[in-house]
Length: 169
Image (tube, rainbow, N blue to C red; front, side, top):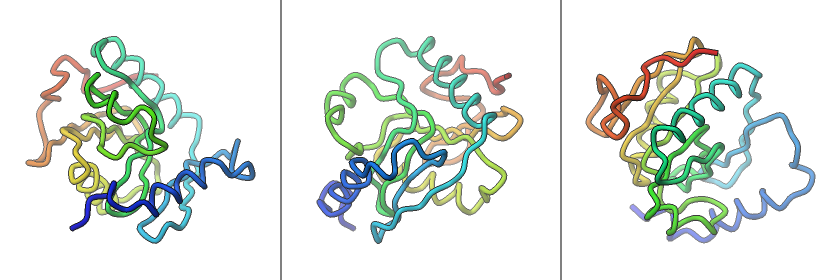
């Protein structure tokens, strides 16, 4: 299987999407699929509030490294945007100039929306792990978090053991 970074078409396609002025300021999360087609998902205020809360807590608990929202990650199925991501300082130095990270951040967080399915989230977790993530966190619509490694569900995050299992708005 080819690594995502070995596919210059995916990176160039994502750079084109990011540079397209007609796509700026849309109220949608934009990603691409493996064919380079744009995929848009509507978001709502609660989604953004959970995203912001998780980012703030991560920044407090992981002061070394970089917290990024809407972090574009190259995967085998196109560019996926993690709602919140944490990069170690070392990994951040590798990708900070990229339009999309050629290696996933160590922690990728997805805030679920009503349209998300279990199958979609299983696939997304697998894509992030294949791209190099250590953990993938899911935040449900009530703020409950679940933490995963490639081996499966965890009781709590291994990277941030003190991170709460629920975030409040």
